[in-house]
Structures are given as C-alpha cells and as structure tokens.
Image (cartoon, rainbow, N blue to C red; front, side, top):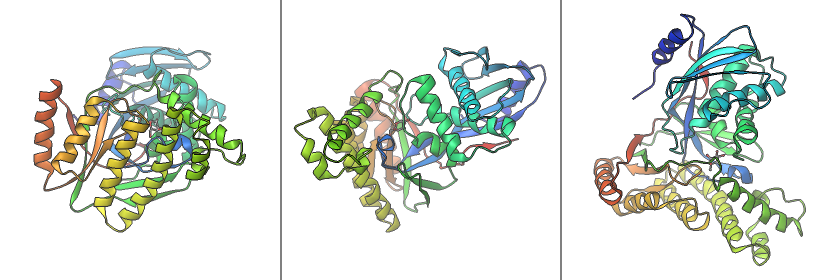
Length: 386
Ligand code: GLA
C-alpha cells in the first residue's frame, strides 16, 4: 500500500494534541549496478524509488525528542543531551542524525515527530537511508536555515550508520536518497564525489524487484567483514605502491602481485570489486549506446561475482537469478548489501507477464513461501511536502 501524507498527518494530530508540523519525505533506492564499490572508492549507479519515509515534525521548545513510529506503534522520548541515546534502532537513527547535525554546528532543539515508511524493511532498498535522509533534510530546514549542503546531509546519514548503528557502510544509499531525481538514475564516483544524472525511460524494458522476503540485516552482519577484506588487500598493495588509498586505485597487476600475500578469501573479494568498477563503466557506455543486452549481461556477471567471490547471496536469491536467466530475462542480480532482500531485473516488456507468473509459482513451490513483486518507479529525493 502506498503511504500518503494524510496517513502521517492524522497520526501526528492524534499523538500530539491536535498540533501540526512540517512534513518531509525521503526515498529508498535501487541500484542498477556497482555493488560494494562505494566504500572502495568505485562507481555506483543508483536511483531513488517512490517508496520512502514520511515524517511530520514540530519543534517543542525543549531538549526532548518525542517520537512516534506509526508502523511499529512505538513511542519513545529521549534527550538531545543524552550520551547514549535510545536502544531501539528506529529511534537510534533519529538520535544519531540529530547528534551528527549538532556536530556540524546546527542548533538542533527538541521536537515532536510521527513517522512512517513504505520501503519494505530488510529488502535491500535502504529503508534506513530513507529515515536518516528524511531527518537530516528536515533538521537542516527547521534548525539550520537550509545551510548544510546536500552531500554533507548524505554524510550525516552515513555517519549515523557508522557511529550509532555499527554498519560501516559507504555513501551510496544516503546519496541516492538525498540527490534522487524523478526518472533519472545517477552515476556517482565515490572517490571524487562527481555525479551525473542518466535519464531512465527505456521504451522496451522495465525494472522489477523480486523480494525474496529473506530479511537482509547488515547490523552485526558480515558486511563490515567484507569491507575489512578489501582494506587488507589495499594494505598489502601499499607495501609497494604507497599512494594507493582504496581498491579503486589498484590495477589488476597490483592485485596479481599480492595474490600469495593475502588470504584466498580476501583475494576473491578484491577481484570481485575490481571487476565491478569496470562493469559500471561498461554499463554507462552501453546505456549511452542504447545497448540494453550488454547492460543485462553485466548484471548477470555482477551476480555471479557477488554470489561466488564476494559471497553475499543466498539460496533463494541464487534461485531467483537463475530462474530469470531461464526465462530469458535480460539482466538479473542480487541488489544492495546482500544476505537476502531483492533481486533487480531488467525485463523486456513483452516477457514481463510470463516472467512474473513463473517467478511467483516456482518460488512458492521451491521454498514454500511467497516472494513479492515490486515494479520500480524512479522518484524524487528528500524534500519538504508541506
Ligand atoms: C549497503 C550499504 C551501501 C553499499 C551497499 C552495497 O546498502 O549501505 O553503502 O555498500 O550495501 O553496494
């Protein structure tokens, strides 16, 4: 069901004595290609989706944040002057964002808020970045005169993940949630920060997500462990090439030189990353030339790497990707951090109905549970609604 501003407004009025505040929204994201490349200084290719987070917020003249999660029917109060903050993650994101904004000199004060989202949680569509970006954008508007620039707002969300949640994520999700633009994907160079919009309106193709409903969870997951593997390989390369900072700076030759100096696992992971950096660029060229078959081939290659070398897939997702291949789908791969969540599929419009039918019935008969179909609509980034 699509979340509306009215859903949030009616809840806010109910919980905060008939008051009204400003309403803000920020989206989740998809990523066409460029997975686990952001924290390696590589390229990513995300877009914002129409699903996201909506929050109504009103300053309350105290140092207290009074927050109501509409989805979880959970209410909590916490002080901006707390050191530790709330334990429940949905409130911790808000606490973290407020603290990070304060570090930037924004004079955040207490506020009342009710918030809700329609990004399926654990789907790899970054419901957490939607929440962080929504509050970062809102607090900048309410307490910072809109002076904090967009990339810094994205970094506030990322710092919240690092410092309050414990996920050492890259910048892709928060970047997409803040910078998203309707009908456009974006290529971001995570090293230089340069980005470019790519209009996304292919005539003959659709993007569709298949949610395996295996909940992906990055907190306390092997996500940080993947990042550490990459950093160890960089350290080994630095021994003879000290100027190297991330895997993005490393060549295939550099990697070959350290093959016997790093573990087999670390080597395979770094090999995947180098390949993925190349694939994003190949996909950009293919898109510019309108060669969607090449885009699709690269997506399958990415999946293969993520599954076999980076080891962030699972049986359900591997099944969905190979089923897509069997059905003749142009491109398919696991999307996001991994360990469950969705596949992203580039499907020829003519094939779409048969593919969806096959996926639904075969997934059910293989795993005894339903998968969910999510048609991708590329939407706007963080904004004020009223
Ligand atoms: C998660 C992280 C991102 C990125 C992806 C994998 O979504 O938050 O920074 O690393 O995984 O591409």
